[in-house]
Length: 279
Image: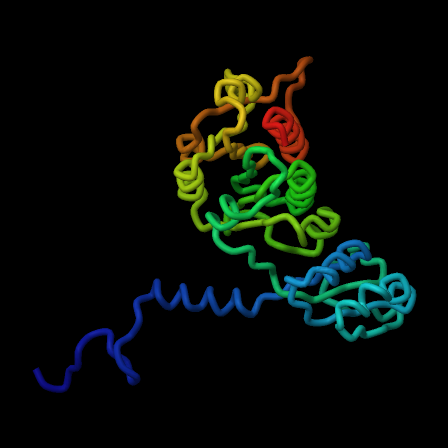
């Protein structure tokens, strides 16, 4: 047939499949993404982090004086502004304390690199926290703090429907975002399967579980790597996540009301695992 070329061919050659176009678009968007951190503590810790790519620092004179050493060590030039003209793209209700820093998101590397090769070398068994669609940045920030305190190698969350790096998360994390690996994966169930292949015991926290966390840890024996999996408040763990876990466990409680905020549940669980592992 004349006058007709092959299908899916544009003026510059063969057209790319839609999924390839979407993937490339997402990659470009990710490369262009930046985060505005705010608050004296979060900004100070980011300035001190050599792995953090810093783009723009906006401070009031008072904040500049408080951060002077950190600013000088970082090498970034600060923009000093009038407190009444603190014009940066953060939520108007944010308590910025006169300091805001635009940065690129941190790249912690691949799951295996962090969960096997990285982490805290304190003699304790490897420990990670996995979050199934926990989207509240304040909860995730608090979990990052607890994870750092108890020596977790990583906090792992889904790339979608979970809290990304934001100023609110960084402020709640109180510096832990700069030090505690926070990995976001495309498929949590696949990541849990990968952890199991590494030797991790994957325990999903569920209030209706019959087995206590402590009993599951006793059965596993000391020295076993553990991955704690927590779901969003309300929905909890998704069915596929539950099915991928080695066991569902609960935190024992007294009284009629037996529910903890997800960040509190993470802190209690992390303490129990760290205590038993000898870390």
